[in-house]
Image 1 (tube, rainbow, N blue to C red):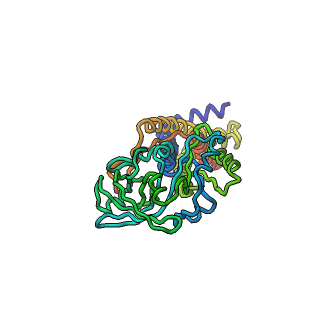
Image 2: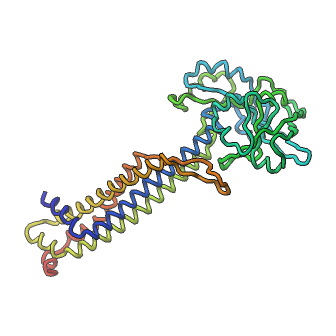
Image 3: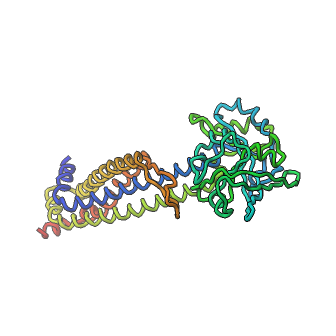
Length: 406
């Protein structure tokens, strides 16, 4: 108990050094929590945007389709009714939409370009990917009433040099090898904030594509949205059991967009690297100040040993001082960081893609309880470990030699 009281008293003796140590720990903890909160918010927003503009929660394809996706094969298509008939028994399913992914040639009177076509049931698609119509650069997105309309990616629109309301010809090859064409009106232009988006992408109504490609009732892909209360992986497993008699493969968005998982892993590694660097800085600062404390209090150490304090008591004294500094700095840093992250979560941080003048999306930093606990452990652990060498050095002093420094 006496050692504890002495340790608490010693913290306030040299206020300047204690303040420098505590501030260093506060900054380290603050940066760790804030950086992780921003990274987590960015990751979540990227994932949500990808799900709500492109993949949906779960997708259904013919076996082998995804392996040949670069050529968009129409022969690996299937009857949409085969899926619709089974959906009612899937408890987690909320909405379902059929799609046809195809390649074609889009042409104006002066220009032409390859088109990566995505044919959608507009009403169902917007229920699964509600952010599609929020990414418009010019004009409007498709509506359920549209039949002869098309919406193009901004890059493709610029290459073609056309305006909203102009007509274009779309050529595509059917599954049987015949070349068909249809005239479409450009209704809108969208931009995508996802880094790997296809710059030749265009959306047309599903019925229009089925007529063009002679695929009445046929689709190449089905996207499904699950109820928020259901686990996506569990729903996908349930679907695999239900569709086991069909030649289908069921994939969650994580399996489809593995690049997103790699991005998350890389950012987590970066966050970990920042934490290690901060740990080293805090460790060095605390060790330096504790060494100075030991040198300044040499005579005091000798006196304590002379009146009966043992080496383990001296060791405990300096370790307790480091522990208290780590706890004070960790708690203050955690409180400040949590408040800042909470405020930023409510305000949001605009994120701009390179070359863009408008915010691509708003990052909502998140308070991660696990990171807060780790930051506290980090602060206390760094302070105690950094105090270990100075404490051991102080405890190993010869009492007689220490008293001579008086």
